[in-house]
Length: 479
Image (cartoon, rainbow, N blue to C red; front, side):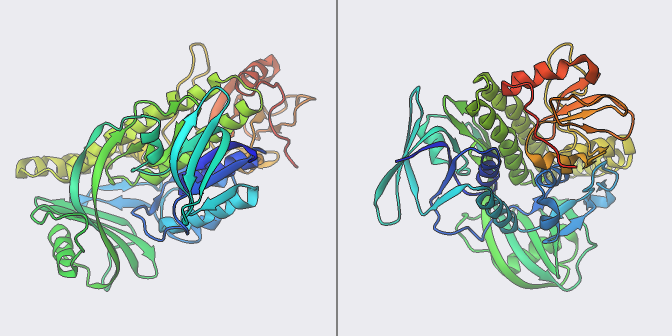
């Protein structure tokens, strides 16, 4: 059997994004998934601004935006609102679209880039040594097979088998049970905003898909049943009415399910040659809709690093996947947990304090904008070493350059050097020139700043070599 650079277990959005990144970099990648066909059922439906920016950096965002409805903010309890319209982004909103649209887009993208997919294959064992990884399993007929690779990534969801096979614990707890999920029609829908309200005995969350279809998440404190219990239409109607004061003319319930919410995170995202990403590494409450987004960000962070090390970069580059993404996963877990606990607080005095405080804080632009940046992923960044520019580790804004928008330039898939207006362009390295004043930037393939300063100093070469083992690792840009 041929040797593969990377085997990815799981063909959800995290696995497909990762496979596409590796294939774009010229690495051989095979995606294994136990399902014979893509799933059409999922809890995820919100795509945040930073995720859309990352998809824009691969030429995918506009296609996804066309499948959903843009909500420029969130309408919360008692008049509180989170305004996303002031985000400094090409996408100042949350896109509401079913996850199957994201899955289909990313799988098609990965296949177009050259990734191989093997569906209907159940992984039963993962072994590793100094030379590589062996992934064992069988197809639907029971026929056994083994895939040999240099690295493997478990992106196989919250019930990850890979996580168990490599001995990674998943500490945490269940925080909320019997949460109802449904896609419904409404005769008298709310404004074209994601709408949330919470009262003593439950909450409801309504998001517009467009074409009079809405995703509803609802929870009734007084009716707790097993996840396998079907969602009764009258139960759903009553819970929405209790939380919102109206059922908005609940019409056809096209699909329904019930689930519970856990808060868990693995201690290590890397175990030798095997990595965990997405829900296999972290799960949290649905408040904020961060799960699918965080997984895509994991994939964008890990993909180029695996490609770099396969191309000769130091193995320590792979350790930065854990050091950068684990704190982000922990932050998302904590922030979504706080939000969920605020939604389910019971004493009336605490609910009254919550309602007033949230409305006042979000109504104060500096605080409201800071919350919007974190909610959207725009405000999340990575650390930097002592002595480096304060810009290092931050998200690169979509600057105007002489070759177009920066995120169009990033579609090359490699590092991009952006030099100052009027500065000489290095003769051995294609680069772009920013049209407005500002420092030179070395931008990573995932849209974060690796270096900032005076391009004439040549310091960016050392940074590029540290990440890629070359000094001309930025991809050529077509003008």
